[in-house]
Image (cartoon, rainbow, N blue to C red; front, side, top):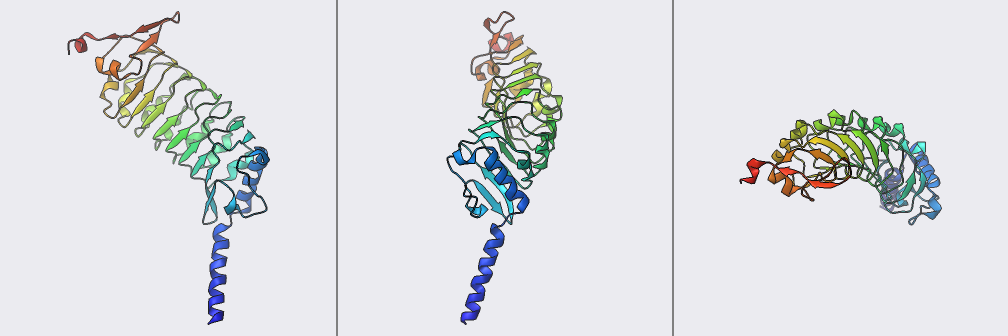
Amino acid sequence: MKIVFTLSLLFAFSLNVLADAVSDKEKEALIKLYHATNGLQWKNKWDLSLSVSTWYGVKAENGKVVALNLADNNLQGELPEAFYDLINLESLNLEKNKIEGGLSSSIFNLKELEALNIADNKLSGTIPSSICQLTKLKDLELFMNKISGELPLEIGKLNQLEILAVCHNEINGKLPVSIYKIAGLKVLLLNNNKLSGNLTNEIINWSALENFSLFDNEFSGAIPQEIEKLGSLEELNLSYNKFTGEVSKKTALLDALNMTMMDENGNPFLLEINQENKLQ
């Protein structure tokens, strides 16, 4: 009986060990991340002599690192290239740290990612076009960084996206046409950038959109009437752009600043409300 009990304990222990183990490649990727981001200064440090399962913010399942949450943990430095060997990640949260440098084009390796949050850091450079290969992404948050350049042309391939938040950066250029194909978008925050160009009537495709902000950019032209047909829209801010023409009363009331625009001389003015809606 004792032998059976002992064997049962050994079997259970071996299962735990196997469940706890991750591949050498993934463990090495985590170690390189630790060293590259000044791990000794982290708020919650890792004891590299202990099992990966004890490391703060690391979640492993079936021998794979599936989640990494090191938000607000005083990471400093650049993400090492080996970091992109964590190919089984489904969720990554590095928000509110001091991560510098740019995102590598190798980010396409993280094909299982559903949530990517590296907001409130010191990221620079452009958003690599290879990010468009992460077709399982539902949540992409890169706000409050120093990211420049244009949005990737093929961003519409991220057709599962529900949250796209890249506000408070230095992103310029026009909205890629493909962005209107992301029909499931619920939150689209592009405010406080240097974006320009027009909105098109394809905005009607964003039927699930709840929060839409273009505040403080350089968009111009008319605001599409289709915007008032977005039945799920609860928060809207298109102000501090260079839109012209008239808007409906419904749209103006929905906007946080009642459609306050900037003219060519940098002076604020209110868009006119069209006559049809003035009579309502």
